[in-house]
Amino acid sequence: MTMQCQILLALAAAAAPTASAFDLMSAVLKSPIYKNLLVPASRNMMINTAKENGVPWADAVAWIRGATTWELDDDADVAVPAYYRQPFHAYEPGNLCWEAAWEAEVAGRAVGARNYPAFGADGEEAFRGAFDDALVAAGARTPAVGETILDLGCATGHGTRRLAAKFPDAASLVGVDLSPYMISVARRLPELCKGDNAWINVVSDDKRVSYARADAAALPFGDSSQDFVVLSFVAHELPPAATRDVVHEAYRVLRPGGQLWVTEMDFETEGFRKLRASPAFVFIRSTEPYLDVYADFGAAGVAEACADAGFGRVEAVAAT
Image: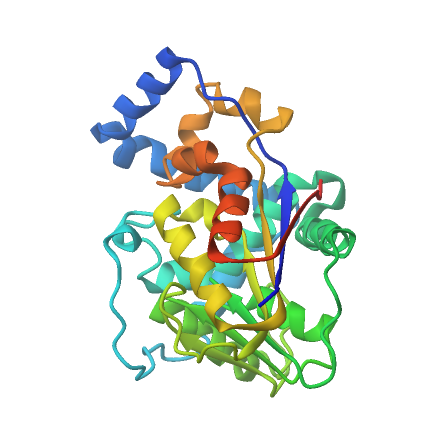
């Protein structure tokens, strides 16, 4: 069985920080300073970035909070790994809360503005577009009529909806996320966004798109049942062992000739070398519990995991 694994390396960073800087960061993250100072400061930095770039954080979050009476869907129970229960993205319960789901797409727009400041509030689309181009350069083919796409770690579905718009011939697109809060928001947004609304992104009601609550390392899909699997900016949020499990599971569900598209940061590039070695990195680490171990694992670790899983071709292309 021959498959292709496409890996995009972007932004990324770095040789290891100096021992003194790393020790300082680690000590701070184990102290009360983490919860009482760093996490609020990191969150405020994100909100301020949104405001400075015309991203209406407060208005969008207020709208989605009040758009409906939010209740979790009645999905089958899914085991939640211990790593997923850690504080994450400035939320004490991690992604297992409504606040994380309500703010996910708004935060994505803020991150895009930070990474592509010349584009302001549209920075996220420019950022994602760079990865689209890199995937093509790596050999990604266009999904043909009747083919299927799985989007792993889809959050509230912005990337899944974007894939649907980009690939109109695909028969179905399924966004998969472990958070029941993310999945509940993803399922309701198309209906909530009909007519006038204050949401941060355009949301179409595409009947080809659906969402499933599942662990990406234990997918509820049969062997050789999918044509494409997408893993977009997920690996840096996982311990390396979980990334390996997810990649192996992607290989299991892909049909012969299927493709795995991975977009991620590359910590071997100059841009993040200085960042990771600086005390400022502590602010990023404060809301990303696995970022430092990912920096060591890196794009090379993801590529190795793909090869170990059985993919016959692994391509890595710089996107930014």
